[in-house]
Image (cartoon, rainbow, N blue to C red; front, side, top):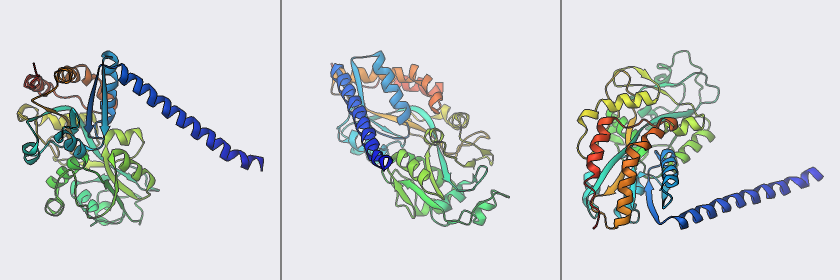
Amino acid sequence: MEGLLMLPILKIRKTSALIAIVALAAIIGLIGAARADLLLNGAGATFPYPIYSKWFHVYAQENPDIQFNYQSIGSGGGIRMLSNKTVDFGASDAPMNDAQLKSAPSKILHFPTVMGADVIAYNIPGFKGTLKLTGPVAADIFMGKVTKWNDDEIKSLNPGANLPDSDISVCHRSDGSGTTYIFSDYLSKVSPSWQTTVGKGTALKWPVGLGGKGNEGVTALVQQTPGSIGYIELVYALSNNIPFATLQNHNGAWVVASLGGVTAAAASVANNIPDDFRVSITNAPGADSYPISSFTYLLIYQQQTDKAKATQIVKFLHWMLTEGQTYAPALHYAPLPATVVTKEEAQISQIQIPQ
């Protein structure tokens, strides 16, 4: 009986301790912000959140008069908040389309920050080995055409594998998401059926599946749902030890998501990247190219209205393109190609700082 009585007491103590820790962290954060002379507010993509968190922390340590407040709410939310001018910068994995740019109060510049990969993560109880998928088969799964793990379409790609006769549970994003844009952009290129019935975008009308908010939400869904499959950013799969599929690329080679594969995909467009940096590198040619690769972007107004903030944004962009890139590989992002960095350095000079 004593043991039973102690359980809730221990839970209460642990909960109280956790609340105290969270409260202390919040107080420390407020003190840091209070000490800073300037607070830069941003919002958007969850895809690059791990490296943005690292960058903002390191940069603020090196420049204690600056603090960043970044809300990881998805690319759609970041574009919306920037367009409404409720944040100083936005972040998106999907470049803004012509209609979004036209409706913004003034011109917005795209600055690629790093490159990353979407992976197709799965949770198949009892399955041994690594799942192989082609783009068209992945599209059929996410459209609800392939509903069993031992379907012939999957078995033909994985001969001899112990695939169970169980239902597939599709997991996808519930929020406006650049990760969704990258994934659906890829599927639109490799599956005519997907292109005509679902298409590409940051928010889709999903034929089947469960929705999770952010990369974190889809990661949790896949972890907690036996028989599930979902698309998440590479770092979320690696940090949570979630298996992900080997994919067949544009050249027919089987490739595993890696920094090298992302770099190879970027190399296919690096010398011909458009001046506004709005480019897709999904399903890129090349024997080593990983097919669901992408740039991710910071979105900055060209015409700034606050001199102090604009000056610090420009300084940060220069830092991001130099020292900041050195933090990318450890967090499973690929650094930008030198040709892209050079073009971005030139574009920084287009930011207009009030006098």
